[in-house]
Amino acid sequence: MGYEPKDKDNILRTFTIILTFCLSFYYSTSFAGEADVIKADFRENNNSYNFSVTISHKDTGWKHYANRWEIISKDGTVLGTRVLHHPHVNEQPFTRSLSGVEIPENSKIVTIRAHDSVHKYGGRVITIKLP
Image 1 (cartoon, rainbow, N blue to C red):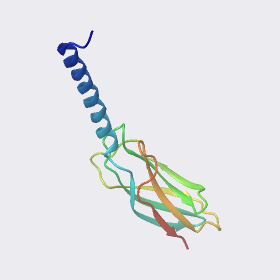
Image 2 (image 1 turned 180 degrees about the horizontal axis):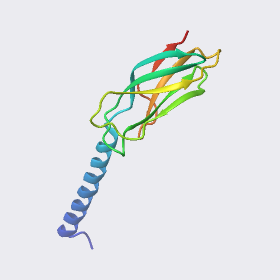
Image 3 (image 1 turned 90 degrees about the vertical axis):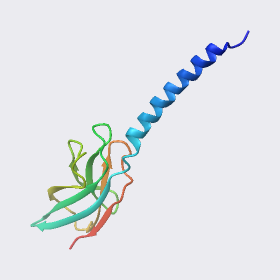
Image 4 (image 1 turned 60 degrees about the vertical axis):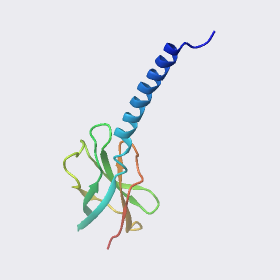
């Protein structure tokens, strides 16, 4: 009792289909890379700050896109979050603002990081020393 050539062909065909599906899914979701912060500006406004942040990410659609950026203190406390509600496939890089961010006196050095729906954090960040 063994495999007939016809059975081997069916097994090989099934394996090829599964492998093709897995690779196409992997490539479509992972090669957009991580979201990078490429520019960040701020303006002091009374007791708070307004930030304007430029993100670069090769959004591929709803399954893989830059979905937020955050301002964090040196100790990792999130001081402000700008949620990005949709992919920016045809708008790269893109800039979005966040106003009214209160920065504690002991947190005058902040880092801005971006987040994407697949890789989470890990792209390029920018660290700013506030006045």
